[in-house]
Image 1 (cartoon, one colour):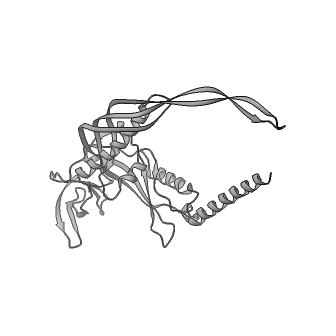
Image 2 (image 1 turned 90 degrees about the vertical axis):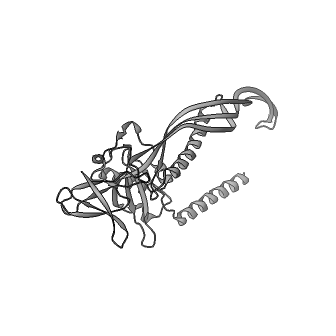
Image 3 (image 1 turned 60 degrees about the vertical axis):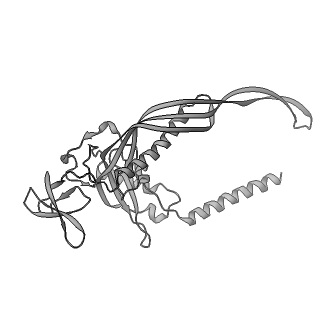
Length: 314
């Protein structure tokens, strides 16, 4: 359902006023959100705003596949996994579960790169050496050794880049979005208000120029990774490249994510987890228990010292 909105200022921050098509109530929606649910009849509403370059309409949307129950299950499994996290965190129960459509930009471009590298080709040689056997006799033996021959390689490379996605939300940094990627872009659908009806949906809070900078940074890393996979031979080193892109395009899309809070200590802020609403992949940063870390380091040092002492006693 769509509803037109009018901007107001309540004295506690700007909001938008819209009339519910279900029961006729006039409700307020915070600026930055695209959706609302009427508190009287629970009818979902999607704001229909006049065209505004600073708040563009999405081009595509990906639907939710992962249910709230599965997102919670995935989050609970993730919480129990980090061995060096405090015990209270590993026993915590995630709360404040929210499914939302996150604004993001899908970046596509044609990438070109000129590269220089050293390519390694492996071959084996048989070498002769002398050693002392168990009886103290000097003996001559042979062994097989792998040798790498290095040669320079230069060239040009070009590819179509179509898998770069960056956040358009100041609330969820790009590093957190990367933790739950990839999304299956084959399931993209043309955006329509009904696709996000009933869900929390956020407007972009980063400018298109900011997102373009993020996308180009990711593209540089992606080009380096692809070039590394493109190198011939058994190994390579000293890879350097100069790159540029052509035919750049940014399309605003809406990504399905679940956001959860994990409160594990009264004196610590909650840990935010993000779950990919399409695949169930969980992202977050678990806190560290420095006591566990210290004990593990002490045990490792003790094991090394014991091994050295044992070897020296022979």
